Amino acid sequence: MTNSMPKSKPAHRIKMRIRKGDTVQVINGKDKGKTGEVLRILPFENRVVVQGINLRTRHEKPTQEGESGRIVTEEASLHASNVMIYSVAKKVASRIQLVVEKDGTKKRRLKKTGELID
Image (cartoon, rainbow, N blue to C red; front, side, top):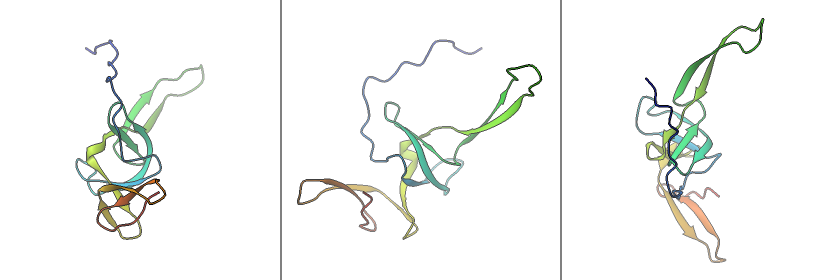
């Protein structure tokens, strides 16, 4: 029996260093070692949705007469701690370091390679 009560939203937004469009590598779970692009971030839940990772299938009923039902495959979210930013050029996953430039702008840099992301 499923609980029909909606999930309560966490009180605060979590500051995330991973952003939409980043290439990440999964470091834990059934898709460990796979890489993909971040499609969406969920900062209140500290989760990310990655293209082609953590796929779930859902069976949909037909909505109109004459239409047939279908099976939809979509990405489910992963916890942000299970992914690391992936450097496509160096083929290595790394943590992120926030760096303040001389002009006062903040940049994200990979710790292992020193490569700037922004």
